[in-house]
Length: 387
Image (cartoon, rainbow, N blue to C red; front, side, top):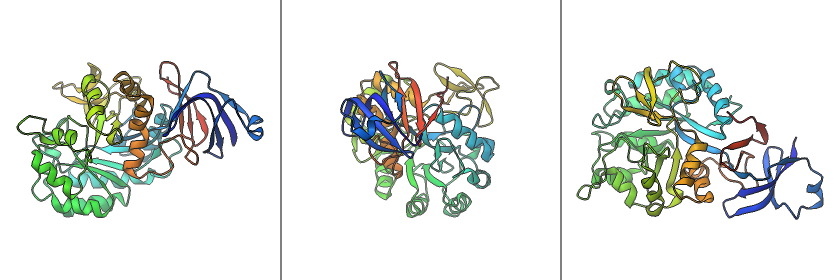
């Protein structure tokens, strides 16, 4: 169907929550959003998708995800990214950034050269581009990254990585306190790459110096960074106190305590909170072995943990689950929709995505009464939601 209505539905738009709406889809885009009880004559004859009792929100955008359903960039196979795109579409994700683990610069180069042909060939969720989580991070805050893969800041090495990406790198996580990081920051900024502070032990002042140069986004807030303290606010404190700093949030209720998830909306502008999954390759995988970054992981306590030492390796979250977590933590429907879609689109410069509004791509998730995906539309085409 090129022209059809989704109705009646509760539509969460950037301006309002419309309780009895009709979303008119035309050629893969949102043509109009109407009052379901006052349809113009030309709309009354259109085919309809029944959505009574559902909430319609824009398709999710995940800017930090390592893998899903057994597929991910670590497999070094373009087809794995295309399969990941298809699997994510079934969960309501309309766009995502495949995230590369920290690795030696030469290895990241090699991986990008293998993966970049996939970008633009996807028929599921849009591959926005790659997020590099390293290699210039702090050895003091490795998290699950392998210490031997962490590299000192090196502009030439970064330039070679970017050449290998050939325009497909959209964001990079780095530690702004590293000696020699300034030229890397400047080069990334000149090339339109979003700069993120993460896996960093920067002091409050060191982070603010980095922010002044352009590192104004924070990777998985509170995790793998210098913590908030009343005498040394650290990176976490800077993110909380400075309204111009945006931040990722792993909204699974484990990486960040639910009460802090709730608290965050009282101290940060909502538009600066970007929910992400940081999900690992085995998330959604039906059978083992469960591997992430070439290491065995086990699901325990609501997260993936490295088997050998129990360190949290990443989440098993979907964006739909993150949306529900935000609601459970007191976010309104429009706030949760912004944090899981429109904020990310604005941050990364993705036009026509992230909002239920006229002219936008018809990427729509219909949520049932339990706020689980009931139906998913990608560019106006209905997808079968994942179980």
